Image (cartoon, rainbow, N blue to C red):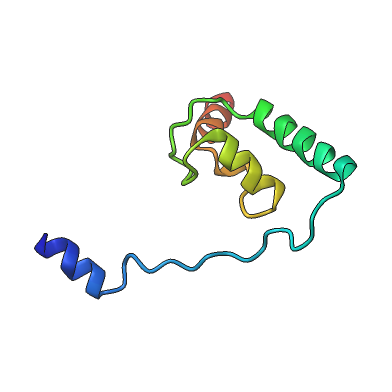
Length: 86
């Protein structure tokens, strides 16, 4: 508890929420295109939901990639597989 309080007072748990999310509502065509693109990105990920990239799930990482907040290379598993091929 002491360590938590120390880290809390140092601001370790202060987070800045990104406001890069879409400001307007999507029409149905745009929404479907968004979902299809996220599913396409998700199909390239391993589906392990390991969280090593910082996102809680592969689906969350795919969405972050769609919004250009992350890159496919942020996936630790994919990076490891690419290293093995070299």
